Amino acid sequence: MKNNNWSHSPAWILVSLLISAALMSCTPAETPGESLTGSEPASASGLPTVDLIVEGEYIVTMDENQTVVKGGAVAIKDGLIIALASAADVNAQYTATEHVAGNNRIVMPGLINGHSHAAMTLLRGVADDLALMDWLNNYIFPAEVQFVDADFVRIGTELACWEMIRGGTTMFVDMYYFPDVVADVVESCGMRAMVSATVIDQRSPDAENAADSIRKGLDFIGRWKDKNSRIIPIFGPHANYTLNADQLRETRAAANEAGVSISIHMSESQFELQYSKDTYGMTPIAFFESIGFLDGPTIAAHVVWPTETEIPILAERRVGVIHNPTSNMKLASGISPVTGMLRAGVLVGLGTDGAASNNDLDMWEEMRLAAFLQKVDRMNPEVMSAQTVLTMATSGGAEAIGLRDQIGALSIGMKADLIQVSFDDVHFVPTYDVISHLVYVADEQDVATVIVDGKVLMRNKEILTVDTERVAHEARELAKRIQAALAARNQ
Ligand SMILES: [Zn+2]
Image (tube, rainbow, N blue to C red; front, side, top):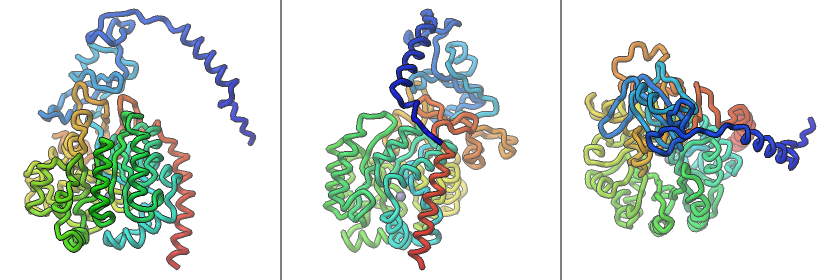
């Protein structure tokens, strides 16, 4: 079929401009009314107009007092929460351009996935049931060198955003290659993310070695630092076994120079523990501290094997630890002493890790497993309460990644990153305790509405910002090539 691209032609642009001008001139001028804050334009009802009012039978705020508002509503304007109270009060004070009803819905902060490799959705299931180093060195790294290019990262990240939005995740901290492509996808899908420029001392899909990846990382950070408030560029040095002490120091210096955080894998496996002792004469966290690597905001993924003396270092340095229970279980990396770290004042959030080691991006499952794993490890059902893990997935996670003043809780002035969980499903009947149900029962399919920065990304389970049909098609086509190449390689 002929495609003449008329919609991009100058003639069409001119027609569009004329139409918009005509529409604008027909719009009646808004009459100024009384405004509670003095800044919102008034509607015909005389009430100030906000962009969105989102209601819920319960608003689980995750604020410092763990406030739950029954029959509440949140008013949102310009991406921020400007009111949170009973639905009656909010509706008496504001009128909204869009109103999201709250029958049988719980409103809560969007979930924060503190550690992911989004584009690895395309490598989901290519190699399972292996130990971390075997899995990395013999499957993942070779597959990445062969297949990962900008297109792979675009499609894989789109798949991940689709999956995360569907499941109520609003923010993620990503570490992968081609960070510009990741950032572009995040920009278009409407999520919030920290996007790492990965630093690794080997030939990777987007760099030759550590020095090259640091150089390219600085360029990436320069391009994105102040471009879009939803996208925070950071550095992602891979680990202390893929970079040496000098390269880790250089990355820290570059991050501090650029004024950005670092996300890194830390003390993940017994291999790393032994490698660190053999190579640096110290356990990983003591080593990082000794080279000044913790002199700046650090997000440490995993931290499965901290020693008794290292835990206070994490607390003192305010390192944000991201616990990834599913990945740690699947790769048999071990059980992170999360209970002890929390007791020592360490900031702990939750993450999924990549879809190749999880094998999904489901934060509800992560919450549940985080609770159960600590209970069975400690042989004590009282540790790791539902409230504690819900905090790790929201406000605690926000604090671990350094954004506690902006996201992770619902209160006036915070960014409007929130979700509605529907409790229509049979597993919500009856509901005695909302927090218990959110952690021990709810799953991705229960998420009905997702809002980031005051914009609706999913309405009544329909994703609005990802072209799911196209992405599914592109992913399946790419997977055919990967599968054929893997089959040839393993012959
Ligand atoms: Zn990881």
